[in-house]
Length: 369
Image (cartoon, rainbow, N blue to C red; front, top):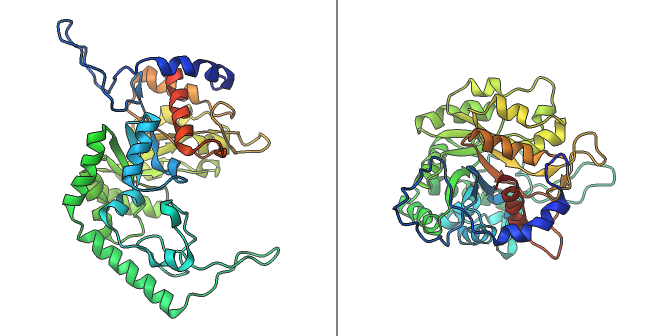
């Protein structure tokens, strides 16, 4: 198997591996003197295996009830102690104003994350503000019903309220949020605010809050405008602007180089799954070349571009992404690059996203330990 461990072998060994005690490990750990008493095992999660920090982007739990208290619960159940935190959960805890469009169109019910429809044309939302959608005509593009004056006014007020909330944030509330994660033994290494279209004041807020949460940077989707705007601001804050890729590498001539030249604060969140699924090229080629500018890696299993169906998410071990090669490269070289599970394959009705994330964690552990 290209992944180095087959699904059958993995399922056959996972039960035994799960019974093993998790050996505490961290970057730069030192050997304790023989006479020093070995501390009792902690009840806090530890997903650092062989010097490789396995975590998750909390987007993986988008089908589950939201909120940072729930995120902490999911981390503990999955055995994860490091995350890329989606800002929606954090800002919900911090008290961001409620989006009125959700109640108007029934979105966000049940306390779960809902992917909002695109905002109305010409609007610059400070946060997600869905527009009303109609069923598309057969064979035609989706149509959107024009918003009423009342709805437009509600969006404008919401955007202003959100901006005021952000630039006047109570940092004591941020400290409360960080303490919740600290007490649970969970590190937040990235906050994904995606703030490149915000005002400069709101972007400052994003970096200030991310730093207060203990994160090393703020994440955004890669693009020339976003990199040029966020790179210098990140540098000013002594942080990183971290950029995530989808299928851009499949476009002829695409390269990280122009983006990295903007600022030393520009780093990459390399999505190895999207890269392999769209190009068929071994992800280690990019990792080895840009190891000093890759802050984190999103890992998932997919089919390649020449498989039927192409570039399609798969249960780990059933796709073609060389997951084992990636993890063992990091282990061999001890490069301090975070590895985050991004759960995107279909979760069956008898399971849930947290159980599947736990399985992915165990899959990585079996490779690394």
